[in-house]
Length: 489
Ligand code: ZN
Image (cartoon, rainbow, N blue to C red; front, side, top):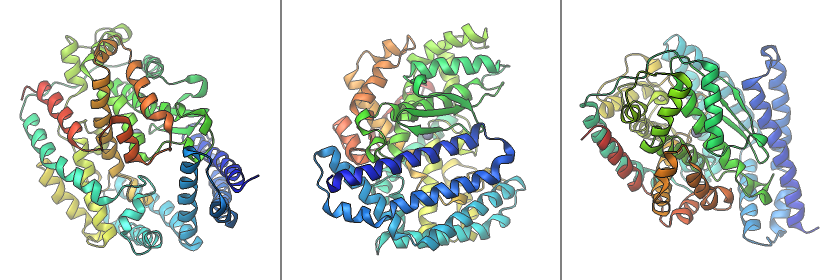
């Protein structure tokens, strides 16, 4: 056995245990009996301790020093193992434990503060979370930028300055487009009662059409839809609302984007570091492209309109064009998760700027609510009237996820780049989408991007797939064209 073989054997076992930990998380959100929660917390903590010990095992550093990779994939494995090991050893055990303890408490405090519209109850514990994450950032950054250090957990190889350059170019054109669209008459939302079992059956049909392999996956219901797992066991969840079938159908297509990415990674990388998606941003690019550029396209919604009438009867919409407009309806609101394709990124851009200022120490948690409301008014034209519509709306900061928000918009930017390249390669794509068949597009993504898993860094992967470095330009062109046509600008 060479050092490389020893290292890979160790990494495979670690990966297998991490998959088990992930499946416990899936179980907790889907089928776990409510009374099991205290025991589950101990089970997960015990498994997490095993994983931490394996990742900080001193033998890993010794193997890394000696290991010679046999090929490019082996080099990528070494790069990912080294990154994970260095991250794990840099953070003192005391700090990791303190972060776990405080964020677990903060999440409960946040939920109660949001319910009772009491920001003052949340501010002190959020200040503790920010302080701990700054301490962690300092341990990881070794003199460098704290936010960049935190970002590496979600979008490795990317800096806040690179993100800022793209986000800064997006903001003025998105606020302008949004303003122009909202001055035009908007379609009415869908109305009626839609049988939930029929929604679920149609969601399954869509999942398979988009390439989800149910022999290596399954669909369950959960309060918040998500995708979990990798390799031969990748599961998704969805939810049904009798008044809003789009919620079920489009969140299913979104999660299928995440799940098929994992399912389509080259089987040779199974249970290794390379056998996972490249980053949160690349993951989100797949889910957004499936959901928006494909699922909300004129061609595909034309087919979906007919299918929904087959399933639900008359849905109160006259024709395919009207249906396409309803699916892409832009409306005023405060909540990120209820936002449309056009306004969504404005929500993320403000969170990125605010959390960067918090981590840099340029903004205090006591001033966060005022800063949020000012920025929201500047970009959206009106300010939230209650904290649950404002800075208390998202769970992310309470659990310490600083550096995570920008990956949502990076995903949209990458999706814009991939979609433009895909359309160049597949001039007849709309003809297939109009038959309810996205397989030319999903096949293109599998070949160009998905099968590689973590072989390349995110930006290199997008460039390899599209022939160009990632930029905001294709996404802006797509949004301006699509909403310009829909709202006759
Ligand atoms: Zn997603």
